[in-house]
Length: 118
View 1 (tube, rainbow, N blue to C red):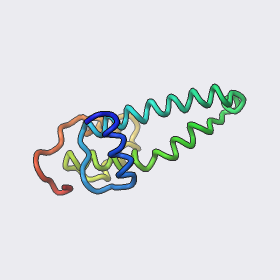
View 2: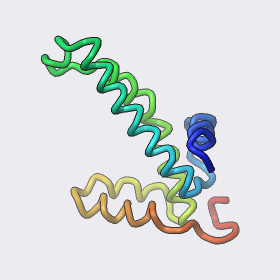
View 3: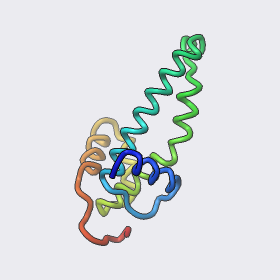
View 4: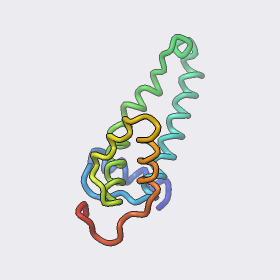
């Protein structure tokens, strides 16, 4: 899967929490989201330096709001691919350890063949 295919797949399943997301789809999306957020931060700094000095980052904030749902959806689908319920995403609320466990889940291979999520 390429970066473009992954981004189109995630955006076409904008709020789809059922099914599975391959490891490549998840990580290509993560890379695209990171690049987009860095670009939004640059735009904030270049176009609105006074706002940034006051702690406002309107372009970054709008982008973050726009991608929060697809981020959550692809994360849940990635957990489904490893045959785990999407509720595991709440483990991210546990500082450090929760994020490390989730990272371990994200890098694992998906389950072979069909599982209870597709």
